[in-house]
Length: 372
Image (cartoon, rainbow, N blue to C red; front, side, top):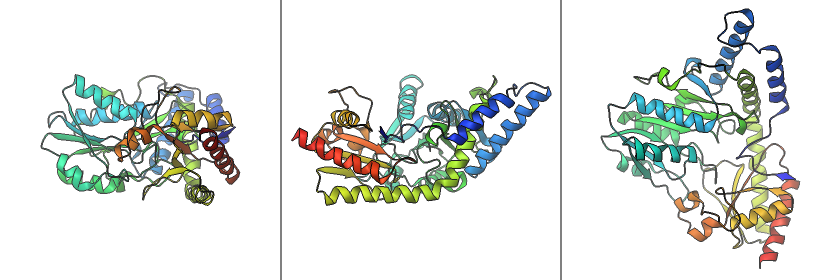
């Protein structure tokens, strides 16, 4: 099988797996215990916080481990809203956000009296600063915008947005799950109040993530969020996550260049062969995420056909054959419902090679011919 769904999840690296096993064996103590075994575990835990905070240019005391990206997004938003609860009830987000954000904000709107506005994006999927300004009002307390989209990889101008929101005194959350380990992240340069990262996107174990809550946030109540965890923490998972994150960050520049070259090769080959395949391209996007529309074939059928030939990709949404919902991202950038239902996503990773992409191109040609 050729795995091309790295934006969904990555296989755990040998380094991360080794660390997980070693920490499970040698640092099994409860970090809350006062004996030597517990103290050793606590020391390792604090080192993990320090090392992960260094990777994002932050303070260790402001970093908190979670059970993953969804848990992190919800906890970060909850923390910021709690800190600003006396200032207003208006939240701004985009139509490109991960479901963990969309679903939680919908819950807050339906149950907790919040008013949620969706700021539009342009045809490249970018939030326009001037358009964002139009949506800000005196009741606005939070803006939540992802660093990069998981379907087409478009990267948002987070530091510019952060500058505007700092001037307005509005808190800013950023979902960095797709960008962590792929492009540089510095909490101070991004000018965000909180961000989320996840282990399984960077070749670490599942069930682990982290949030960063800027120390300058006033009225931040960590106890209300049960942060840090009061129970027994998943130290093997945390240490394995940090090891994977360090390894991914060390390889980041080299891997970015390699994946950029693979993307260029793939698109060039499609053009040379004059295949009826549309690559969703924006002016600033993660190179490893490639959105495609193959002929006039609905995305779920294209995905299943590729899978039949041993190539694993995904569609823009969870689906069953014949019942695919249109990609919300493609709708947001102006594509019609028909195009949005034809969307599939390739996402490249460490095992991806030119040979892998050559197989994809040959298979696309077969699929187009069979549906013509």
